[in-house]
Image (tube, rainbow, N blue to C red; front, side, top):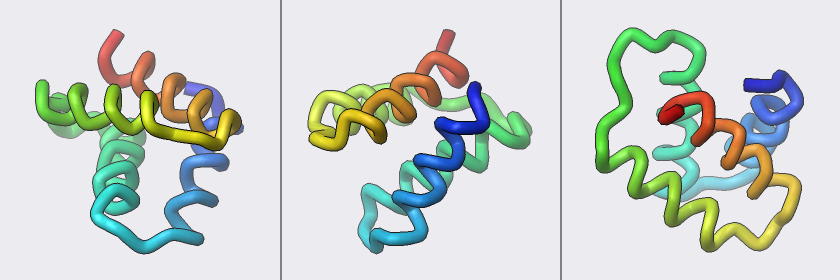
Amino acid sequence: MSEYSRIIIEEYCMTHRSKRRDYIWDLLELSYSMDTEPTDEDAIFLEKAIKNEKNPELREALKDLDDFLFC
């Protein structure tokens, strides 16, 4: 996963407060440590988040996260 994508996602998480943000933050932390495997629920959530994201820069960063965690 590119560092640029991580920065975009971190910036989003620092400027928003919601359950969606918390879930994305947890997935981002998982990408750093990989202590546990992502679940099917995580994959479904991330797929929906990508589909519904209106910001193209954040959408690409989320796709990068998805590729890193689930490919």
